[in-house]
Amino acid sequence: MGEERQALERALVHALDFLGTLETRPVAATATAEELRRALVGPLPVGGTPARQVVDELVAGAAGGLTGSQCGRFFGWVIGGSLPSAMAADWLTAAWDQNAGIHAASPAASVAEEVAGAWLKELFGLPPGCGFGLVTGTQMAHVTCLAAARHALLARQGWDVERRGLQGAPRLRVLASADRHGTVDRALRLLGMGTEAIEPLPVDQAGRVRGPVLAEALSRSTDPALVVLQAGELNTGAFDPFEELVPVARDAGAWLHVDGAFGLWARVSPVHAHRVRGVERCDSWTTDGHKVLSVPYDCGFAFVRDAAAHRAAMTLATSYLPAASQARDALDWNPEFSRRARAFPVYAALRELGREGLASLVERLCRHAQALAWGLGELPGAELLSAQGFNQALVRFRAPGAGPAAPDHDRRTDTVIAAINASGEALFGGVTWRGRRAMRVSVSNWRTSEADVERAVAAARRALAATSVVPPGTSGA
Ligand SMILES: Cc1ncc(COP(=O)(O)O)c(C=O)c1O
Image (tube, rainbow, N blue to C red):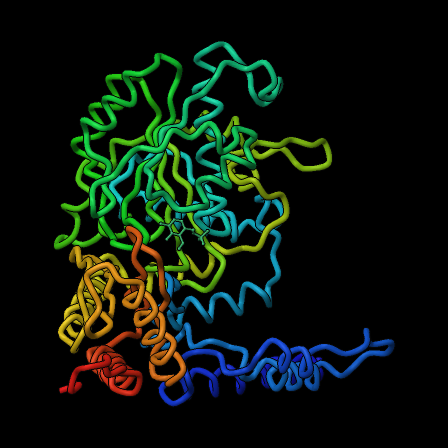
């Protein structure tokens, strides 16, 4: 017991030290992979090491290799931070070490998951009877929802896919936004449908699929169709116009699946809910807990209108497990068997924020993203490529004296991103968007403040000055 207490107390001290120095430590990791290997890799230990020492040495070895994704100036990718109650509940989840696969193994985990699922459906305005799966992230939420879609679409053709598989099955069409996230493709690969099944739906400049485009694509065949849309395009934060698209898909009898990894949270804010108007009429939805909701990794949610199809695609019964009575066994709704009780941190985060706190969190993230995008866009040589009013934006940096589409702008953009990141003041990612390099501005951390936005813009201003190139034949003024 003494050793256990010592190890946990050391973990608390180290965790508080890490969180307490987020303001002063560099946002990007500073150690190279080689330095980390030197610090962490050694021969496989033959004998044991006291737990407290293991914790201390892990912290020392990882130092420099941790990014500041918990900090308010981390704008690379859509990562999100962790709320205090969610972090604490996550520690308890480890201490309790419950197997949340079946109710009998942890009644508390099972009921916490039921509650979290019901609250989330209410927040998103989804049908209370729809199926709910608590998975590792949007990736596995796609797998869960698309397995349910595969079940339902093939069952309508008289084909039992769980029993017979896909060999010889009727053809399923997959119509997906050309700007979809790569996790959709991987889900289709894992489900045996393959990426060749995808018919990409052309998008507008912001990344939205429009009604006539979907209507034309659906009219090309009468085969059963699965349509994948987005609430929140990865780079622009644009939303597919669900009100326009849902009736088109309904007329064709298609299954409508929504990737709402971060954007489905628009639904909880009166200011942003209009962006997802009509989304509740789709058939399945995915989103993450580890992004906007700010629970620790890894946490994602799958919702399926046809709960019977969801359950049929996932359920598993074995004689050594007690049959569920009135209780809910999570393994009927997830692709996992044994699993972490990740409902506890979700339950905690939802209680810490409440409906109002969540709405104001979403609004704050979007406000900061816009302030950051416009602040960066006003810097000398900067060009704001996209700012749709949500939490994502794109900026590029133009090389002085170069033409509109010159590769010099791409190089300049990458140089400025690298210089900002090297300064340790903020972290941004880059992307090739519509053929041009751009800096992604992604605000998804509850800690981000106005001061963080100002600090990031100042860091970008300094990076621009430090890397400025005076084109030949100009005064550089
Ligand atoms: C739009 C979108 N879809 C899917 C994903 C994948 O989510 P996860 O990493 O939780 O699997 C992401 C991740 O950033 C995303 O932004």
